[in-house]
Length: 267
Image 1 (tube, helix red, strand yellow):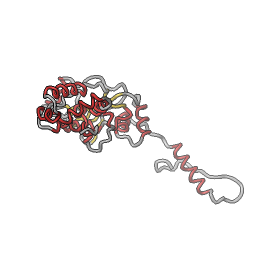
Image 2 (image 1 turned 60 degrees about the vertical axis):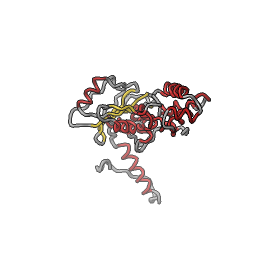
Image 3 (image 1 turned 180 degrees about the vertical axis):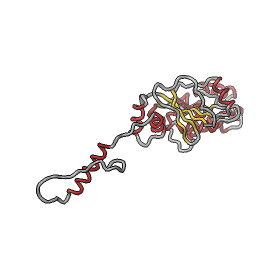
Image 4 (image 1 turned 120 degrees about the vertical axis):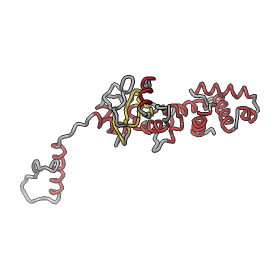
């Protein structure tokens, strides 16, 4: 029986009486025949994209990568934006070289894009005019695309007002607060760079200075706590900012810097 339709019968032919295991053997033969005869439905590109972003198992990831013609090691990002009643946004730049397509999940449009994906001013203007909020995940290999979805969604939830597009890279270790987070720490740029700094005495000095600054109420208070001139503290924070890629002493980055320090165990 295949898809509730009887397509044939299986039986055992041999001389002599039936044996105790014959019934089980016939059942197994019927099951095997049904599996062989069942027509396997070819999944669509949308279904393969869903299996890559929300995989039921590891085999589904590799199968979908092959079907979409994406090397599992290809660097990618995930984009998420709120779907509305109008047409979907035309994402800027070139798409992934494979056949991945946009999918709609729980009121969001989710797309797989190259790691080099960049937003143009024209796109921001269009998104703003349509009140669209978008999040762009951190980067990872295509085989790990499923762990990026949460960071894209988390970034989208941080967008609002004139800020229509938020990059998860700009949220640093705050990405680890995303619901259902499965993001490996090494994929968070801030954490990876701070961990690298811990390998040297100079890096530890810079991180200790940031810790004192975050725990103090001002630059001068941090300098007093460390028995240093405030210009020395300012210099160290600037040097650390250059290495990490964001201003650690900017008020808007205070939560990001604190999350990074707590994650690397230096707070």
